[in-house]
Length: 256
Length: 363
Ligand SMILES: Nc1ncnc2c1ncn2[C@@H]1O[C@H](COP(=O)(O)OP(=O)(O)OP(=O)(O)O)[C@@H](O)[C@H]1O
Ligand SMILES: [Mg+2]
Image (cartoon, rainbow over all chains, first blue to last red; front, side, top):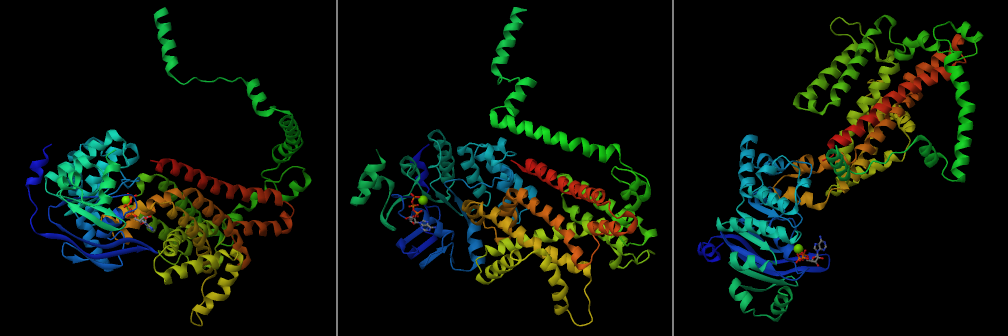
């Protein structure tokens, strides 16, 4: 895989996610503190930071799995408010991959994939299943289509979860530590799928501590701590010349 | 020879060892392991010896099956004759005698429909229509007044068809209502939530009997004067409302077992509330609660016998009426054993089926 060639398809200056002055509290806990972030179409952003720093909460605010209390979030031009229709519209366009896969255990792999398109996008069943098979082939598990999630390994389940999101033809993909629940030998198979996706120009926000992945794929790396974006830079600069002490400390911890 | 012998040994070595136990060994291990258990075994055997032979003698050897009541009184065994002699009244109550074929056919249809429903391959789109058609035909058969069938007032309905009707209609209506209540109880909307909690707790706080009584008093209040609500419908409503509250609590338990991740995955695909519940949450939650749900349905089935208190003639009451007639007075063990057998067959099939369903749905 060639990192440089991926980065050469530069994102246009076409904003797809805009976050202004975002605050979020869980009770008294100030989890997000004045977050400002703009993501352009085709951007690939990796977010890292210590546990509890608010990384998950931030990306979960983008598809409103968490409700923010202050500030403004616009996704593809639509502002996230209490309006359910808007929320559903945004969720159609924003795929999400979870740490623990969250496949639907009572459905087969194929049904897991076809469900969203059939019920949300109103695609005919046959067409939805064809699309599902296409994406299953892309993540190299077409032969498992008739199985149930419980019969698959963790790495396979995560690839199914990615394919499930892709079936909705999303404009943005959010990943919340997609490889941290996996056995080490399965991490690569999932990262390879994500790298493929990056090569196709998908807009991605990835919470991850996989530094190799960040270096080869990301346009920008964000470092979060105590609910704030402490540092934001290109991967090269970020890893080689971290500016803040907290970043330096964090990097020294994860690189050993 | 030696070659194949060797192969066999190797093959056996691969399989899990099979432990063979002789009869004597089994008895030792299961009945006489220790002083206390040995005493228990001996006492049990003694009691069985005391109970079984006399019972068998009464029930089978000295019993009379097709005789008059007088002959029974002369004998010393069980008088099973009470059942064939009164079977039509026990099964159909006061339904007009010459029309008994109608409830009979309706019952056969119901059993047929239930057997048909056992196979999950039949659970497709037309399944609901088949049930609706079946239930309508049964209703017409019971009620008459259409297609040249003599009308039969529902006051005359009774016996087993009434029991089956109250329980199965009750279950089919109570289950969806219970699911809705359970969802309502977990709703984000405070008003909905409060109403559901109030309903569930109120109903669970009173016995079914009081609900049956109240239905007799309360229903007329909700309807304009002059409109009388049929007794059977009142009883049916009480049973549905009662069972639903219990179903709701069981289903709520199932809903709690579904992880947040499942909700989030469904939401992040853009599914709306109804889709999320129908496609993702309920199928998983209801599967978990099959065993306790069936427990509730079984007790609901048995509880239908309480309708006697508002003077409905279910199968237990018709049996009691037979026992109240001078000629058959005193043969209650036989009659009650027969009714118990009917209840047992129904309840046992239900729990049996639930176990099978549970196994089939296991993935
Ligand atoms: N639903 C919730 N209710 C209350 N507190 C929460 C909730 N979710 C998260 N928190 C708290 O908010 C803070 C930020 O959580 P978040 O999950 O965003 O951190 P994170 O950066 O993703 O950490 P990790 O690397 O451990 O996943 C943590 O202190 C966490 O305990
Ligand atoms: Mg997290």
